[in-house]
Length: 179
Image (cartoon, rainbow, N blue to C red; front, side):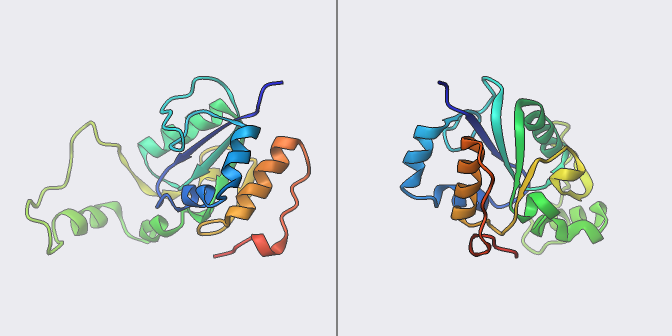
């Protein structure tokens, strides 16, 4: 019997949710026995090689590349899980949502005291900055949400194992972190 296939990625965020995945410690060996990883920074596979059963997304969408990656994950993953506050609500990157993009760019590239070359990057190869940071569910359908900044490793472990085994998720209050 083939193993369920899992993919992960990070959008606008700090990569802390992937650190929580790694914080499952020695259970990562059990996880490798239970699943096959596909596109993920964990195995450094950069493109999908097959349809995945479960996709884990951390981070929100702050630019056109984030939206493209998220839509690609939705298309290639049967179940999509938003992991962490940035994926659920935009997180810290969403603190810019009350400030116009033009002001953010001017502050970062023109008015910052540590910038020497006062040029706002405008290369056509750069992703387009969105008007605000969007949580994942504003872009695609999300099947499950794991809150926390970052979510506890036990929460990620419990949710993944339940999905893999086709069991109901039992997520005791102690493993759910709301911040």
